[in-house]
Image (cartoon, rainbow, N blue to C red; front, side, top):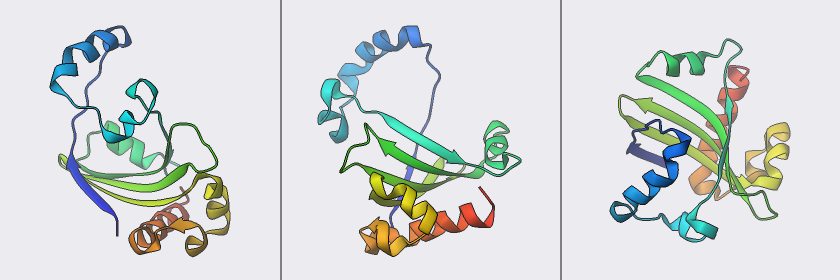
Length: 144
């Protein structure tokens, strides 16, 4: 099972202050290994969030519910032949988070969602298989 647990804090920053903010924090931060591989040390994150018909997960977030979850698909950068997609379930408990994720080729994402054949499409089944089953269970069980 592939789980990540960490604490994270987010802040709002007006877009007109982004460049000045980046310059100010540059001496105090390091560029992560994924950004170092990219032009201008930046990468794009795209997410598709699943929710119930009555937007249960969205309302839990807005209401500040401490124990909640997000179900999403996440991809990075441009979708190319060998790009990966991740099925994720991110659970928040107070300020800590636990993330289950399953990895597959982006080009196989639609097939997995239609066929629901985890063993056919998920990469590294030893680490990611159970997370994929959990993801598919949630989207099917709760009609996300």
